[in-house]
Image 1 (spheres, rainbow, N blue to C red):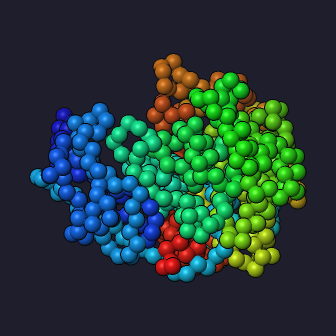
Image 2: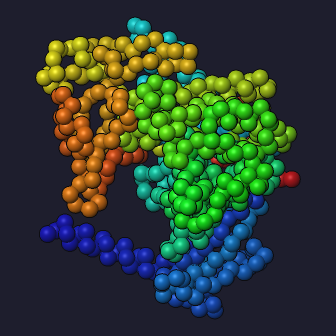
Length: 583
């Protein structure tokens, strides 16, 4: 009873506070690059007339400060509330700014910091994102690809063997737990955002495309320096991380609109899966309109490729603009493509490796003498981690490492004019606790927990020696890495790699919107039902709030150290390119 009273009281206080205060975007303590474009919006708690609504910047009327007056929206859609809106403004002078808004009765202020940069130091910037890449994935990738003898690994990962390292916090503007959309948006814009949003501050209107926008690094780099832009992934190109490089929407699932924004922005390189959203349903696609974006991209001068062979051939023709779409949905990971032939490989057998995509992207982008910005994502790490499919996640971590290694070699051959950063967008709550040892006891009737070797009983895994690219050709060995997640839906634990296809831990439950353990694995010898620690509405493992690791090399990388905010990654890249330097 007391707990209910306290909760109700706090809820009423929160509602009263919200009703009496204005909301201002960009939000309090925003850090804004000098000259970067953004939208300024004030949301009033009620209806406000033009003579009562005020907006000042450091005490100066907004119309004078920005050279144009904000528009008053008397009633926002579906709400008896007013707003002030200024689109596409900039602040060019570095310093501290106080923004104050009033409705005649209440006033609210926020502060922003506007910063400039020094002169340009890097010709190119390449951002590698291991989506959901956890420390456990990194360690496992090292063990499998380099081996370990008497406690010492046989080599170092390229993603770890970089001169600069930092821990990066990942919280968004609305939650301590981020998703890939607002996490990638922080890197792309330098602004915190809400879950599911990218390139915008999520406002209260129902339209996911009218929210206050903030300019992306890609836009700045092209607008101010004439740089080429590249986006490479093995997920759908419309997925959150690749989309955040370009897109402005608070609904990451707006794939049709994201493709339209890709076309409007015209990045020189765009590669990954997701071809279904480039064509209408009448052409076996998934678009809700009748626009064929494959035709539009071709008409705009793009070379369009759909297989690894076509990609290799296109690379030899030296295209100026390249669109590669290698699967209707997400591409397949390394374990299925190279070894198990599971997943979607039967339907799309010739999908290029991330290393092949990156090699061609570098060739295309480096033709621009002004330089380029390239974002490369190994995105299936996250998808597999959600599905508790640790082996597939680790193999795609090795692939990311191979792509980083070849890119660092490429940069070194050029004289190190390129800033290279490697980071996760968010963490997964994974931990490497030992090994799964089928050699500890005989028979399938041994309880699964007795197969877990910890401390001295863990020993070392006995995967076969890796091939030249760092991949053992088998994962079903007798001493496997034991990687577990701290966030679990109901599922059947088998402690075995899924050799017939990617793991599917859950199935639809009896109640709409709920999930239960997938009966597919119920009959696996020794399988144990694990009751989850997540709400029944969750069908997979979830992200966690721990910091992620950022490593960097090249001009400007010395800014990477200690503890950083995810928005600081944008600033590191902006500083290296001199995007806020005085002309």
